[in-house]
Image (cartoon, rainbow, N blue to C red; front, side, top):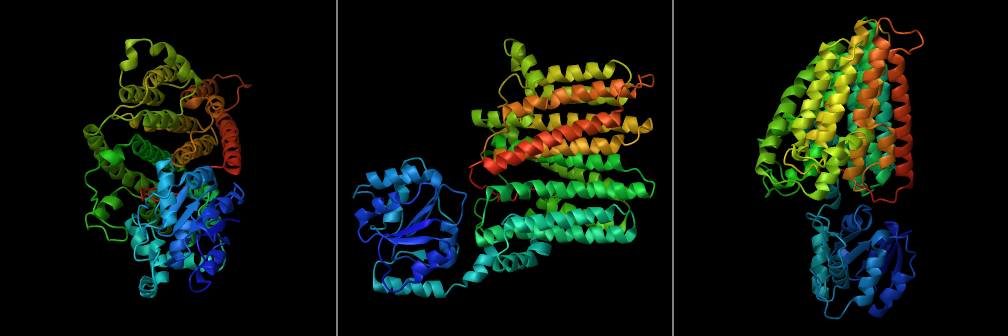
Amino acid sequence: MPTAVLTSSPPDDLALTNALRELGYRVGVADRLDQLPELVAEIPADQRVAVVDGRFVGHRHSLRLALLDSRPAAAALPGVLSVAPAARADLDRALARRAPTDEPTAGPADDHTAMLAAALERGGVPVRRPDLGPLVAAVPTDAEARAAALRAVDAVDEEAVRLRSAVKDHDGFFTTFFVSPYSRHVARWCARRGLSPDQVTTASLLVALTGAACAATGTRPGYVTAALLLLLSFVLDCADGQLARYAVRYSRVGAWLDATFDRAKEYAFYAGLALGAARSGDDVWALALAAMAVLTVRHVMDAAYHQSGHSHTGDRRRPATRQPGQAPGWTAWPRRMVVLPIGERWALLAALTALTTPRTTFVVLLLASVPATLYTLAGRLRRSHAGARGTARAGAVLRTLTDSGPLAELLARPVRRTPLARFPAPPAALGGTVLLLAVALLATPDGPALPLAAAGYALLTALAVARPPTGRFDWLVPALFRAAEYGLILVLAQIAANKEVNGALPAAFGLVAALAYHHYDTVHRIRGGTGAPPRWLVRVSGGHEGRTLLVSLAAVASLDADRSPVVPGFASVLTALAVLLATLWLVESVRFQATSSAPATHDESGEPA
């Protein structure tokens, strides 16, 4: 249980003490300031500590924002300082070294919490100061100031502010106007009944999977029910994040579940539509796989671009003067809608599922992805051209996102000692992608052309990763590698289906789904600041270039009309590879989430999902 230490007894009543206890804190009082280091030292090092000025006056939600948010190492308000276990040693040093001349950054001159926050920042600890909006947090120095602060507290509808702040500032049009007006009330209902965000996230997954099962029936009532359940799942998906913000209940596992389940729900729904279409004699697995591949490639491109730093230095269009909660200009909504974020995409998916066929649904989704991708890509290329080269840290992140394995690293070593190492990475990656997919489309799978193209792809991959990816356009490389790997599997599975190889396309869908999980998990870990997946995991899974070579060899061996009967079929190879890789990645990912001590991280950027 966390502990709050008051720097003085509350002047009038036990309201502050009771508020801290209701937030889950034990409360102690330092009658003299020199007792504070001793009291803090007695608190176990693995527990959160708060130092609170006994004169504090403010809203309960102000305290909640500073004391319950598990994401920052430290958080501060006037009269309040909260420190996570990771920064406890820094707090102890600040208490030991604090001099009488230390000045607070805000508030009264004797606000010792502000002095400690300033000392932590000088020691390199980032201190988060929550945006309170109209909420009050003050340390009055006399009776008149205290009375004024209490009047200010009474003048604000705290519950209305809390409910409004539960909604993201930068959501899409459909989410903002058609979901959030009531989903935030669902979030409050869940909070008052003690439900956690993780429980709501899990409920959203179960509802979406039920919808996918309904779609798999292949009947019109099944499709209509599936569409309604998909929309209900999205409402719950919005409510889980709003519940986390409303109750200030963030967790590392919750952020992982939210990020992972979003894609699991959508791709399971794609599979349900493909199964439903198959019941009526229409094979749309290739379209379902293409829709999944296009979306994953776009998301990898988004992640790589933002991690490269260009989104922070090159975007001049977004006004910096808009305050949180302020409505965006009218031009913002078309820009947000054209990129087809999750709200608009799921609304379109639900409407098409209810009213049309699975084939029409996937064709429209793919067509809608074209302007979304081109608009996003054009803007980012323009900003990257005007921006600076990436930092060493950005280069390390992009190298991780490439998912290059031991074969690429082995081939890159001699390249680094030659002038070829200066060759730009994006043209090399683009050349390898075009070579691999062109040969897969044009050559017969029973000859040497495909394995040779896969070998050439590995060589061009080595050329692309031979130098640190810090160029202006190097954020394109991970997405190009994803397009090559997913595209190869799709093309070869379609060729197998044309040869009447049963189950090739569903098996390919499963394999790409496993690959997408691995790549989304990598993105989530990087966004959360927990680093890349362990290097041994990338080596064991072969890297993208190793897997493309393996799939190419499997196609040559199994799709040859004169193959030996002992050679397993292509569908069997894809299925086995999907199961092995999915098991490997899922087990390691769950192990990491269960044992990691990294802080919670939730995506509040509003970037398209």
